[in-house]
Image (cartoon, rainbow, N blue to C red):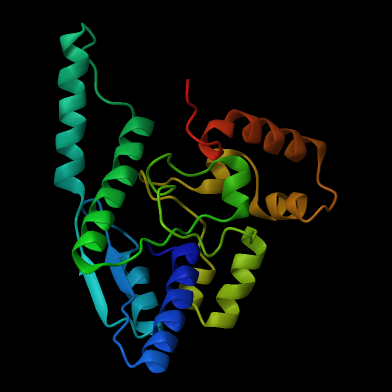
Length: 223
């Protein structure tokens, strides 16, 4: 995505597959999948990460056409029940996230790979990921880390400075940033998870968000 979480996950995966290849003599692959929606303003950062970690295997799949077709079908469906309107910005953002995962799992099936998630503890507590989108993965190597720790690991791994210093964003619409959307800084989020003192306002927002998004973290209920 061009963000710090995916960059750290890339570095860890490349290190792991390089070690496996050296140990076994077999060719283990870390595949970088670049998935812009039309024009992605920071896609150069994605390729910087690929260069930094010597990522030989790369695929770019533009999701714009697929997402727009799904959005159009949703709008046709709404119209059929008397609701003539466009799909909402948030709804289309979720379609983007889920379309990316459909593509990644199709590639993983063809190449016998695992799909690696980039969610971490700071996202888990707020539920700041798309259910069955970027939350649908095979392994989550960052899951026990908060955002501050992810940043520390990025520095150790050698993630490009341009990626380390940028504002975190899910990239689901123009101008979106995580902290602005949540109304909580990642420093406050990380401090809360570390058991440190945070403002009452930050604590209350985090705890409300945790309760609101509980359904994302719980198993699928049966009857």
